[in-house]
Image (cartoon, rainbow, N blue to C red; front, side):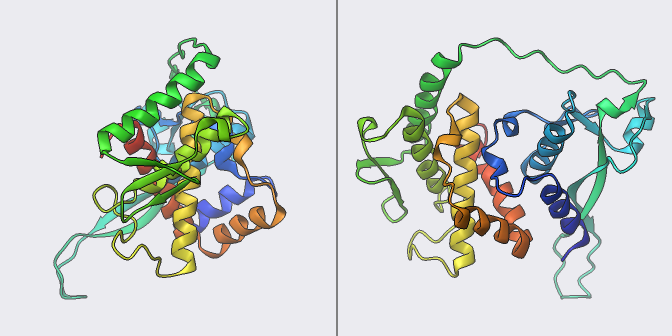
Length: 285
């Protein structure tokens, strides 16, 4: 396995409780960003910094490399072993001699970042979130997300057991009164909307003509993308995503094994989930 990927997977597993699905935890909704650029981390980099920040009890949402901390005039305190690996891709020179192609080539690398709680001499203030009425936001925001996405992407909806039909670009959903709670309803709805982002006229994660997966791994990865995306969207509007977790030991063990046995697929699924969430929210294509 790629050394950088291994460090990220090891860190995530180190900070995961044995029987939990970390993407269902509300703290995943909190922004984590680079202290110097103020740019939010995305994908696997957001996931890993969020998990570590929660487990370590960090109050700052900002992180920086050792070099960036020095450039900002700060010093690290009690930071031995506290660096968190984040992934980036470095472009390599490609003269075409190795494989006959002259396109751009990238290699996965990692660098370590430190939470600003561990830094002295630099004051990076986080914006104060606006106070909101969570009960109002939950239902209203969830419905706005659903209706906005369906309208914007022209996804059709029909009545039936929750499912997404790629060949028809149609989401099937039961009426709200068929669910035990509003939270369960929107959690299921978000899961199917997440699947619809994979259509080839959107993020192109699967073949919409054959509607078949090449392997069990591909199917598992798509289900993971939909599950993580749905959890993120639930957090975005205050829906209790905990209500939708399948708590069987076999289910939890299955995802734990997937993370261990297919780390590259897991990282890819997390990154695809962030793209799917952004598309559903209308943040980017």
